[in-house]
Length: 307
Image 1 (cartoon, one colour):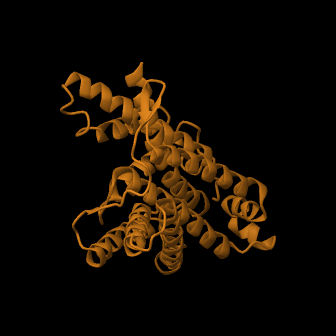
Image 2 (cartoon, one colour):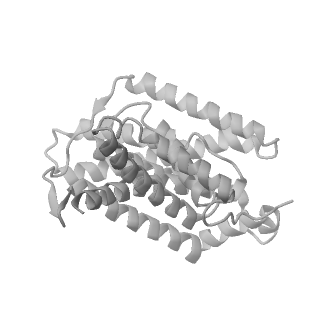
């Protein structure tokens, strides 16, 4: 029971980070039908920017939580500006082009951002400062760290704030109207370009939060750190139903749980030799199964047909 509880905690923490990134994928796809494959690199930039800021202020005498907050805020600002520029420069000119063009552009932006990060921050992994207490806290026979508690708490708060923004605010109504039909929304006074830019900025902020969480939880940052989380977050968005906010959250948490329990089960079978090395197979096995049985995802696709 203790092992199962520990795997549950680890799965929820991992799934919370996947869900934050998956929301960025699904928001952009829901509005302009674009898979932004550079989204994982926004997570990477968030982690590296926070590392840079925290390293620069490490000797300023500030408490660890203050350094973490400052690093997080700087990451959100940089990632938001970066994703705004990516949308305006790379995606907006191709908005009416055949779908293959923006897809290839997204892949190119992913490689470009990764290469620029390698040039700026160098390719070697960097240890992320330990800013919060590291002593494990006993919880029902399992253990949880302060960082993991913070990840779960921040994720729940951010997800709740996003749902409120989308369903209760003027910007949220504009986003839903643009997703339904941008031309009709424009006739009703909505500015689709502004709404799309805001969507990219919000998605970048979520990815920045996930990037700082990822770095703080695993204790390292590097220019390739966003590739696999980004790919798995895209998998989570597809699992839940791409274009569906609730589906992205469910898919992220479910994927985290499957990975955690799957790695533990495989580790038991192999004497803890293969559990961590082959954990990635569970995400993509699950994707294949769900797409075979339910191609629209677990909660179904709710993206409007604009034909």
